[in-house]
Length: 240
Image (cartoon, rainbow, N blue to C red; front, side, top):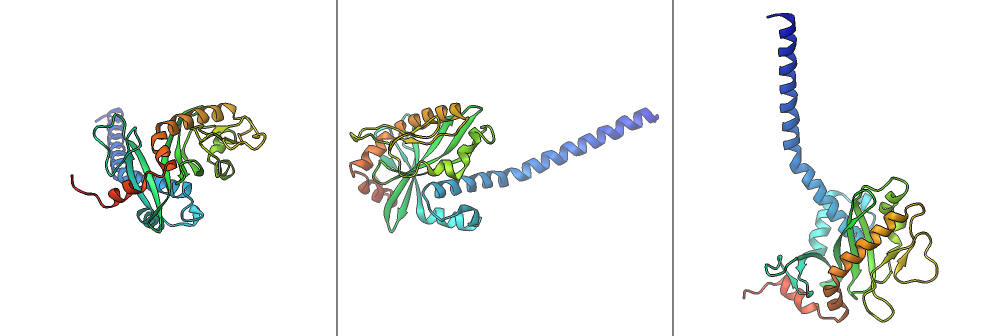
């Protein structure tokens, strides 16, 4: 075999071995990657609901224990009815998380999926059981510019949402908006924006309005105190 053929054969074998190793590593790590993504989502749900304190100091095992003890995943339909599993008759079942404290509903958490400047912004928003007051907001995935729109993942920005309202003074739905800079005056529905990231704030405001509007049926039921009996049925399902 000539030197040239030997070199080609050697390169081919090395390439095949490398491909096999990369494929094996990717397949072997896929389950672990999915597990880490799920753990990160659970951590953000707990953070949004202010459960567990500083998340950086909580171990993965503690996160899972807290999630199992304090969080109940349910689904809502367009009318705000709660279901233990995705309702088959609903055109778009809405995933929802209820946080429990001493057997009572402490808050409910809805997923956020919004357009951003460079990609999707995903997170969670927790709302008090009054159906009006924001308890917390977190972002777990985005592609915004570091130091500008990327500040949406910072604690200072997310804490701006705590205590704000998704209803107006007349009690009707009003969503929550992000100002272009500092929010002027005492506005219950507006939070401070990020300097230099006007478009990120604009798109996230639009996304939050769309997400909250989709869940307005369930929010209205919370505001009208019509939820408790449904939760009891969800915790103790009764056969039809």
